[in-house]
Picture (cartoon, rainbow, N blue to C red):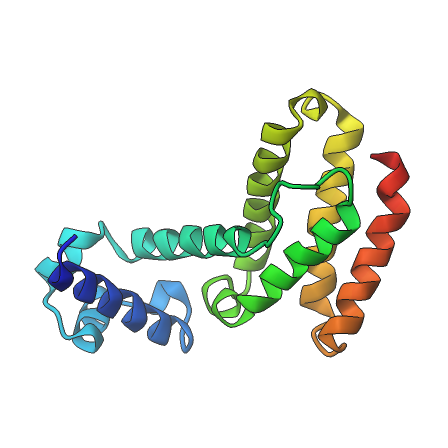
Amino acid sequence: MDIRMEKTEKAIKNAFIELRSHKPLEKITVKELCALACINKSTFYSHYEDIYALSEALESETVASVLNSIPHRGEYMIENIGEFTRELSLAFASHISLINILFAGKGQSDLAGRLEKEVKKMFFEKYPEYQSSPEKNILLSFCIQGAYYAYLNNQDVKAEALMQVIENIVKVLQPLY
C-alpha cells in the first residue's frame, strides 16, 4: 500500500471513530464520514463496501490488537491460567477507549464472543487434546467471559485491585485445568 492509500485509510478510520464516538452506527452516513475525512464517496467505496464493512474491519483489528498485546500469549495458558487471564484483562484495559466506542451498547457482548473465539483458537492450537473436553471449553469460556464482564462492570474499582481479584478467582479454578 502506498503512502497516499495509507493516509486515506487512516483518515477514513479516524473520521469513523470520531463519528462513532458521538452517534450509533446506524446513524452514520458515508456522506458525513467522507466530509470529515476530506475524501469523496468513490474513494470511500474503493476501500469499503459500506459503513458496516468499515465497522467490522475496525472491530476485527481491535480484537487482534487486544490479543497481540498479551505479553506471554500462548506460552503458559494452562500452566498459569490466572496470570494469563490477568494479562488478557490488562490487554483489554489498554484498549478500553476504542472498545467503548466501537462496541458500545449491544456490541459489548459481541466483543466478549469474539475474544472468546480467538482465545480458544490460540488455546486449542497449543493444546489440541483439550478441544473435545466440555469441561475445558466451559472453564475457558468462564475465565474469558468472566474476566471481560468483571472488568467492564467494575471500572470504578482501581485497575490493579480489579486485576488481582480476577486473577485470584481464576487461580481457584486452576486445579480444574
